[in-house]
Image 1 (cartoon, helix red, strand yellow):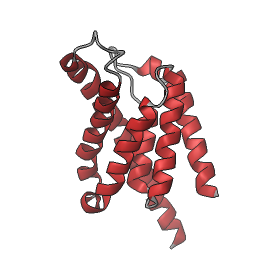
Image 2 (cartoon, rainbow, N blue to C red):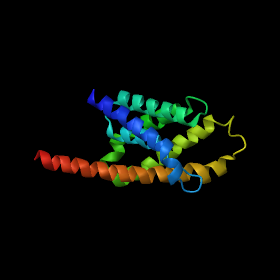
Image 3 (cartoon, rainbow, N blue to C red):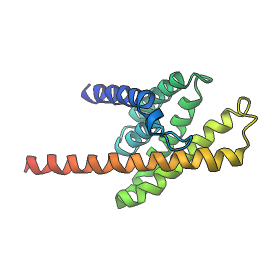
Image 4 (tube, rainbow, N blue to C red):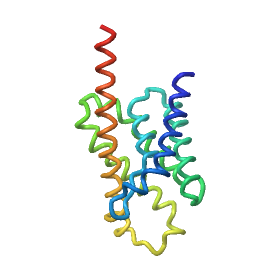
Length: 166
């Protein structure tokens, strides 16, 4: 129950920050996708695949509501990348944060590519190469920087908590 409340508060906080803060911290036309960061971060740190899928679906549904585009596209993209992250995390993430960073970047980019491909009917005027190099990859890089900050703060909090418990 406590995890469910923390997840709901996290999604709500990410949604509020996404809608209120991100327009002011965008670089050029690229804004970070905090709900994607939240979904992938929870996929990396949660062992229960059902909880990962529910978190990804909820974060995707909230992002779909925030963007006002076709409902379900972000939900589907977040579900795919979160389940993929959950499936590969045990083999790759034993190494620590350094291996997480490129994997997070690739999964974030994959989520954006999936969103672009599912949105082809709407985005016909935007070429794939333009979207890839000027939207998808820069947004994935921005998301990765935010993930690094969150992961470092989380590790610091876990170490502090472990020090208190000793």
